[in-house]
Length: 125
Image (tube, rainbow, N blue to C red; front, side, top):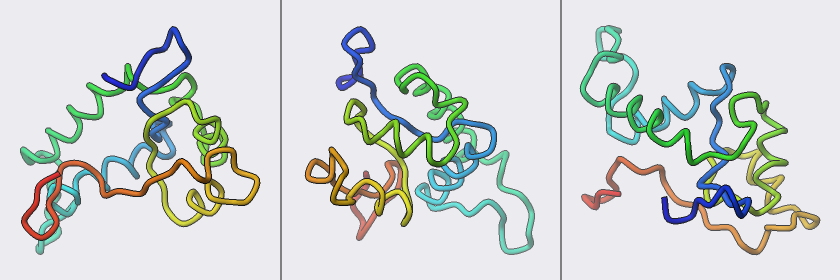
């Protein structure tokens, strides 16, 4: 991965991969592919091509994440990403509040984008 160089302490991301938070990224990526976790009749979409692709993408990216992502809780994740040595993270309101706070060392270095794997106004990302 272009941004990842563990020998220099630079990582592709600080994504949530602990057992308590892993589902956030999975569901976000699944929705990004245009598929909710259940169909209209509440049948699970977990075995769909999209869900399998999401799980595969998550598996394939784990080696590019910073150390500790398998154990990090919510606030551990915020602190790890705020070090400024990782390219990406997932976040919601609390994450952004922490990362753009006046005392955040990366507050002026952030951009916010949709998750890869979806489309907005017909443009895929």
